[in-house]
Image (cartoon, rainbow, N blue to C red; front, side):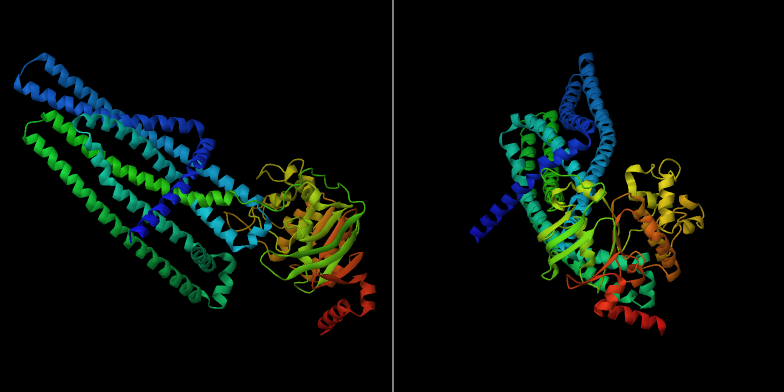
Length: 621
């Protein structure tokens, strides 16, 4: 039994030490975010820490002066002493109140700067980590804990550290006052709080372990809540009668989380109550000794007042220090999750000596024996894949769902690196190129483009952010012609002209006065955003999937002219779109199985021809 207790205590101390290693890094974050405010904050804390001891000392002098004056009334010197101590006590109380108010102002400014600084770090890290992280549940657990903790943990830690510093200064001053009356008094104060400190730390560790164990369950409740309240799901939830199903799932999960939390709190209450009983026994014995000293006449009334007040404040301070220390411990544990997230390292990285991507493609793009599996999957998306894409031509890639078509785009953008083989542009491996210059050389329409809730001009201008006007400035200025030209090329100009404020129309329903577009209209706008970037390589993933046949025909008429001189890769299921390509490749199970023009592929009577015949028959019927 004793060995088990010692083992647990060692484990607790080890975890305590490990968690406190995060404190220097946290303090560095505070310093980076708000240096001047932090200097002022520390100065105020030291001042607030000294003043209670000054007040205790003034209380003794004031009481003794009153007692002396009552014995020998009338002396002006005694009156001056009373007034002096009263003035000092009043000044101390005034300064305590003033420092407290100023401290609130300083902490508010400091904590807001710190919160914004950490949010910026999380946002930057989210943009730096590999795209693969977004497809892993563990990443979302990391991100969930980091984001939820970042909103309040750093601020709580600041409060705890401030309380520790202020309390330590006050306690040190009080111990100096108490020590002449008995060396064992400071020890009794410490003895009364040690069991409480251990109990609190044990409870914190239990709560931290429990909190980590329910991360996925919490995320699932957030998901159920999103399904029940989001615009994107509202129609299906009503049509299929899903509300009760998801509400029940949410309720059952929340009930399990509530029961777990109640059981945790029950253990915390019992442990801290027992520690409190021990502290109460020591406090009672000490107070009894104080009373006995008073009855024996071993202390003046002023000394007794000082003794009682100092001991009482010391007891409260030690409890406060335990609370603040445990808060530091708890918040340091949770901030460990933040630092764990910030320490994630991408695998898609810059080369040591990066080469610039080509400004204009001369030879083309080549996939040479490329193999790739998505993280967590054993099925190869590409297996010894070979493909050459000539520069300045339009290449279409068609095939069944899951054939690996979209994977090509992700690899070309270096959202992933291949597991084997090489991908080259004009003979240079993508992994030897600067990431920024490579991505500037590519413009993309993804299969599910983002619906940015901004103005039309911003939606298009985001494709070439370096040349875009400040947010909300419309299309006036240098970027306006480029934005208008991209809208014309994408067939979006007519749609924009029908909107209430043209290019200055706010889109989406997140903000006031927003206008919602249809799926096809959003796709035209995303195409315009892709065309706004004057990149030599254009990747289009299902560019006409949300368009009706009239809109598709209109866009196809513009397409070749808009893409003149660029190397274009189109991923599509629509043969009417694929027919615009100079060459069509048919993919199946991660391999190219047919290649040629539309006529060549029909003559082969292979998979492409079968699909074409089935589509045509479907239209004829």
